[in-house]
Image (cartoon, rainbow, N blue to C red; front, side, top):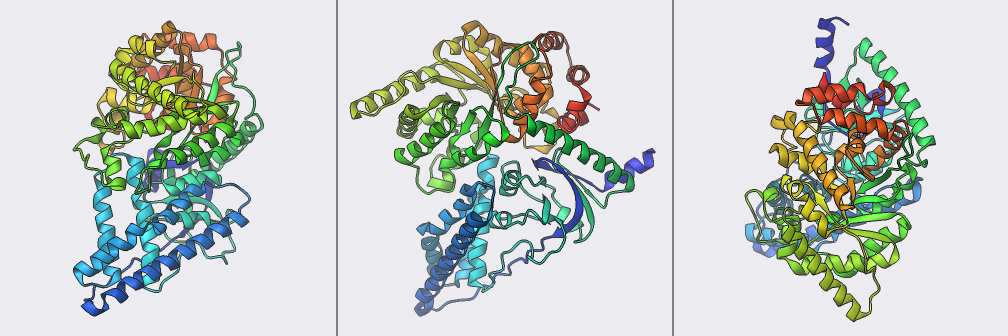
Length: 603
């Protein structure tokens, strides 16, 4: 292909975020959801009560619709889907504060219910705009989509089906955004791919598409405006790419990639339950990162050997009240019993004022919550919340192999204080006669340079390290990893990052404690090769869809080779040198479709 053709090809290429792997080629169906033109009209004082009643009935109608859809989904779908996403909308509809706030706005503004609901949505958007965490910030979509359903019922427009049932051909669904009910109602026999303008790795469209094995790319910004129904499109869920009206050369290229991916995926699935053991006998446990106990249904089908990171924050999302000890206990018990005898590492909640403001009207607003009162710092300040979670985990530990992990430890005293609180929780449970694992393992996340520098001291007070490479890279390089303007600095193969990893792994080795990696690096073969070579890394934890390929890759390498590679990398002084060397060490057949985003960066 000449340079002119290459330039033409790039014009029709959209770069987004990979939400569900796979490659599909087909015709677009653009979801053109009509925007609401919400009228404002004055309401007489005598009619305000009637207007409030109108809103209550619209909420009841919406709740009935969502309940019916959920029941239909549960009856008709053969595959399990993460219904907790769907349940979030039901919880919002059942929340009495929605009715109360709209009623207050109707009365205060002497206005119609539609206008009051619009004002409430704007209020929620303002609240959520202050949240720094991407996962929590995206939950405003739950509220928007739920309130939109109520608005449709108020305006007598109950149309909510994403794709007409009478389609007679397979399509790639393109939309600005998709609601959970949209996505859960998809006919996987007709919808073969998804592309949306908005969303991130934790958006509903991506989570549910992945559970249904539908390739999906999100965060494409303007695609739904630029494309028309019927136009040809390629969705590359492996690399987060969408190609509108592909050229002949692009069609040939991606059809070949698709065939290779399907062949490779079939081979992975056939061997997913085999151990991840190097050619010279080193066993690496490959575990899953999960957001919710509802994700457990997908672990076995992907060959996971346990859970290396359970992000418990979801228990606090879309709630007006904190979950009590019993609710948390039931959730952690489910994890323990489902996985037993395999382990599960429960990370204590990584919450701060930025997240709790939206859910609990917390007064802990901060200008920079990512560097403020969050994670273990928040727990040590609000000890009652911390103890509630610790008691729930301890009680659940009687039913399986659970471990506790503290996030964002930066000082030895933080670790000592957290352990002291844990011991007090044990004593409280003994007095009440509750059973628990008295020798439960306790570990910490290594995700800041300060933790790396004092790793030898930290290792004296815990049972394991889990390296969170996402935050470690962010804090080491002093960048916001979701800021596109500085994204080029997010370099896992920077010598600075490699030296951080090396120091942490050596500290764990010297102390005789276990070390695992649970950040994004764990799910990429090129990075995994380096991590294994740096020292005695016993576990790699990742999203479930990366597990089969990482297990397969580990079976193709030797520990001896990995260590030699790491020895060479330690001597290299630039990111470019490290990248070029690492890619020369990875089999081309295994890199294809697995690390191409990294290959792009090194070109």
